[in-house]
Length: 126
Image (cartoon, rainbow, N blue to C red; front, side, top):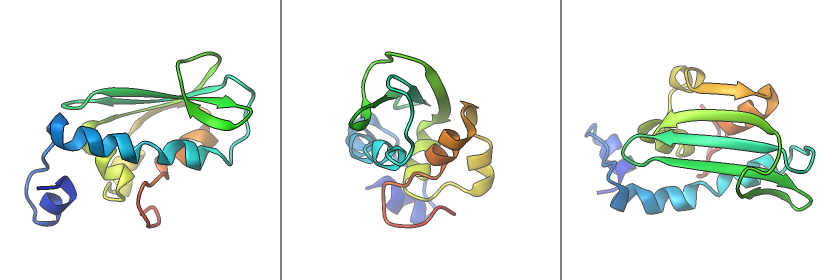
């Protein structure tokens, strides 16, 4: 059963990589879209680090076309770290404001706020 449905039923989320991994592959594309409004020097890099049952590190690099997933090529300007559970909840608008505020971040505060407010589904950040 899908993790958001389990959460709605007050059951533990299913964080297995075979279930949630493909979901993350789709949800992550919200980040370059949301970062598009932030013009930065070419090569500036934002990193999202996810730890837990599904560990992933996503680097988005500023280019002439916008922000793209790529290897770090320039200046690391912002990072945000979260667990697998926090990542799926954040991207689906199910992470409480208190837990959002507690995420480990560093770097440019404007970019950090964009990352904290990114949602991959319809809805406004809580």
